[in-house]
Image (tube, rainbow, N blue to C red; front, side, top):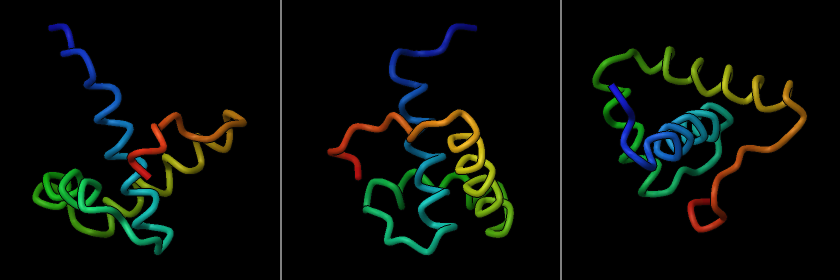
Length: 72
């Protein structure tokens, strides 16, 4: 099954939101909405761990996440 256009960006926004939340940063309204489905399926601790893993992966690849500045 093929992914819809923009799906990768939405996953990126969700992962980045989890990372910002795990780091104790203030998340935007959009990021909060993106985290809600995860929090329905996973315990808060697991969502925070997803954010931590995302941050580690971005760092290991030597870059910053590619997220438009309008979403930060």
